[in-house]
Length: 270
Image (cartoon, rainbow, N blue to C red; front, side, top):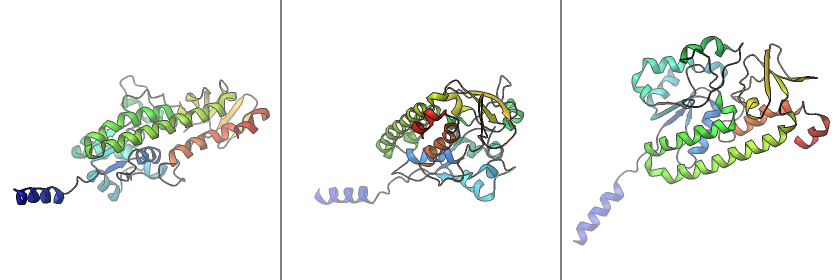
C-alpha cells in the first residue's frame, strides 16, 4: 500500500505544470495594460511597436509568426490595425484566437479629417466611422480590463487567483489616475480644445473638454478661446514597454493641456 501511494505521488510530482498562455497584444498601450494584468504569470508579446508598423500594408514574417503562435491575440479593431485585420481574415485559425478589445465598448465617432473617418465607416452598420483608440479614456480601459480577465482565467485556470489580484490592483490604479487627472484638468472643463486631424478624442471627452474642428498645424498653441493640441501621440511608442507605459501616456496627454491653464491654476496642477 505504501509503495502504491509513493508511486502515485511520484506520478503527480512528475506531471508537467500547464504552460502559461502565449498572449500577443497589438499596440503598446493595450500591451501595457495586459502586462499589468499578467504580472507574475507571463509577459505578453507586443506585435506592433509604433505608428509605422501599425499602418503598414501587411504584417512582417516575424509578426505573422507571432499571430499564428498566439493562444490569445488582443487587438483594437480593423479600423486601426488594417494589416492585422487582413491577416486574420485570411487565417481562420488565428481569427479564432483573436479578441477585439473595443468590442461592445461605446466608441466615439472618428474626427472628420481623420484617416479613420475615410476608411472605417464600412465596419459599422450605421455607416459612421468609429475611433477604436478607446484606451485614452482610462474608464473605458478599465472596462476592457474587466472584460478581459475572465478570458485569461478560462485560458489559464491554474493562475486564476493571480489574474484576479492583478485586476484589482490595475483597476485601482486606473481609478486613481482618472481622479488625479480630473482634479488637475478641472479648471479647463467645458473649454474648447482644437485637435489635430489624427488625434483621438477620448481623453478630452472623458475630462469634460469640448473637441472642436481639427486643425492642420502641428504642436500646441495656447489661444484665447481654448487650446490647440496636436494629439498624435496615442501609442506612446517612444516610451519603454511595460506596465507603466499606459500611465505615462495619459500624463503625456495631459501635459500640453496643463500649459493652457490660467496662471493661478497652473502652479497647482503642475
